[in-house]
Image (cartoon, rainbow, N blue to C red; front, side, top):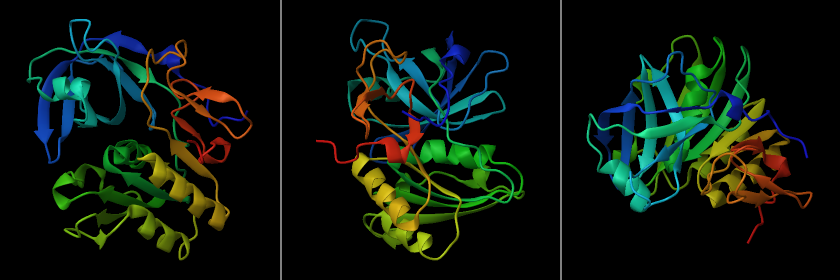
Length: 270
């Protein structure tokens, strides 16, 4: 079973950062900024942290959150409130401390000078793709199809407008409040038919990534996908985050992923 990268769990640390800021957007979407990180903390685009959301036994399981950025000693996480765990994170206050394990998992292939990559992200799935842009080599290029429900969910992107690279943002909204009205995969399909790319990256809802995989197949391009699934231990022991591969094996998203070769995924899963 081929994989893009070896898992980097050996680099993970258990630490207790302080909440520096919580920036709200809409529909339960918020940006959580943490500081007081371990000295030299770094990550690779596509990796995640595992956060304990309560000091009690409920909820018991940590929540996996993709890392969007580490800048000037702050760790930034884009989160949507979808249940008890993320609600508790949203209700946290600046100054509170969290229990965090990470970075965990595999990463996207870095974009090299002269390469152009097509990216499609939906909702919080844009976070690891923004990390890809932030970590791209000087002279890299690409297009990010940024899909959300409404314009108020689009975050401030000035930090990712790099002058030493050539990246373009293409917005799509369900309600037509900004950019294309419809799906980000509509825009991705159009771009794939017009531009020359080295690879395609995607992260977001399963059905969206499945469509991106179809686009990659049509264009004959490699595709890397970050699989957003619920996790238990985050260390590969509990088998709570498995997905089926094309060779019939069950692969653990936390250590064999979350970033995997899209051609190894059984997209037509039940």
